[in-house]
Amino acid sequence: MYKALRASLLTVYATIILLPCMIVITGAFKTDFEIYTKPLSLPAVWSFGNFRKLFVESNIATPFMNSVIVSAFSVFFTLLFASLAAYSISRLFTITGRILFLLFSLGLAIPGQVNIIPIFHLFVNLHLNNSLVGLVLVNIALTLPISIFILSAFFRDLPKEMFECAGMDGAGQFRIYRSIALPLSKPALGATAIFLFVICWNDLLYPLMLITETGKKTLPLVLIDYKGEYFASYSMQFAAILVASLPMVVMYLFMQRTFQAGLTAGAVKG
Amino acid sequence: MALPAFAVYASLYLYPALSNLLYATQKWDGITKPEFTGLRNITYLLTQDDLFRKALGNNLRFMLVVVIFQTAFALLFATFLLKNSKTNIFLRIVFFFPTILSSVSVGIIWTFLYDPSYGSITAFLKAIGLGSHAPLWLGNESITLYSIALTQVWFHTGQMIVIYVAGLQQIPKELYEAAEVDGASRWQQFKGITWPMALPTTAVVVAYTTIQTFRAFDLIFAMTGGGPSYASEILVTQIYNTAFISQKFGYASAQSIVLVVLVLFITWLQRKTLRVNEGAK
Image (cartoon, rainbow over all chains, first blue to last red):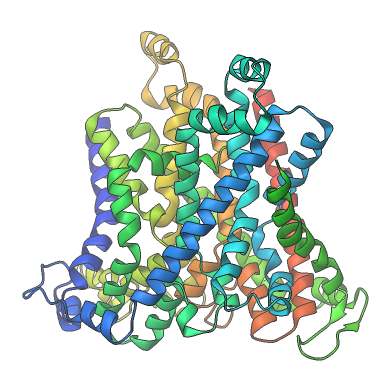
């Protein structure tokens, strides 16, 4: 009884997850008529016409590269700044460290979305709107608190003795950070990197507000544009979704564990 | 060493968050000179703004529905997938998959599934003879919010399953073995062991899910933009519309402040409730 119930519920759930994915993957290669009449079948002819249109007419390569640039720089600098801050907060037991930690915790409590209006005006005044640098800066600021939280929890659990030995051998704080703390925390850094990458790659709100120039748009923004432009063609929209999700999906296939660790680490105390 | 992080954080997070307080006391269209209006924005917002009340109500309903269903499904499926067998690990990977997609992609996929003429859900209902009952999932004011809630549950339940599995695997096996010897049924074991032992994990899942529902801007923007006639408007979409469509920046800041206070209050309430529960156990 229990076994049958369990098996059938798991089957139903797996179907509910996988069917929409199959419809999107096959649909990108179909005609719209085929999507409407035979959503579940394989395409009669595998057509790459939608992709050609996306790359040639809509130039999806530009937003793709913009997303790569913004995500890569955002993740790199957030990790660098957050690991430095987390190291000093969790390894140097000073009053400043405590205060810093409290201040960063404040950022966990205040949802980043409420900053859209002040950020918008600040960035317009600084001419950082319509700029990829601006998006990188926003991403760093928004993801720093949670990254520091995850990393400082990890640093705190590292064996104290290693740091003390290094300190006695005369290594400076920065040296200890670089040659002990960082190498030891590769798994935590990897998981945090994935977590940040997913956030930056998928974010819509801030690009929507800050980017209006076509050449500076990121993938989520052009997906919204395509939804209007190709509203009558789901096959085009599906093809665009495939292009936009491909990097994440490929990475997920090879690193499911890291994704699961990263995308749930934020929850532990968030 | 914390200096670079602090500099970016202070100037692009703390300072903007605080300047909301200043903006909220102004009437400002973003172009002409802002006009100081004191507490007028906030009093109007709290006493006379029906649209704001609607968004607030939507937000709370959206939160409740998603929290209840997502947590229940996640707990149920986590108990199914507890053992680290090959099939279970594979299924966890499958269920987790939507989490890595963007809200915009998920929104577009579900806009298709809900499509009244061509969508798969309508096609499915037709196939089982219920086609004439198919509602306008995203066009009917009274159900749009729930349609989006269902999408949100599809999107993030897998993530919560993984959190639950990690939590449930910490429960000592001896407890279940002892219960089994005493002849306790599966349901009794769940009620007596799993549920109370999983409460701290439930607290984490509920808190995280709640925050996600307040941040659902991307999904709602991609699916309905808050419509039809504000039926799926939540606080963040309303703040965006007030500022960038209606050009009322001061008023939108006042709305932001209410959102912060609300989120802080709900977080505090949840912590308190779940701590009381833990104490009682």
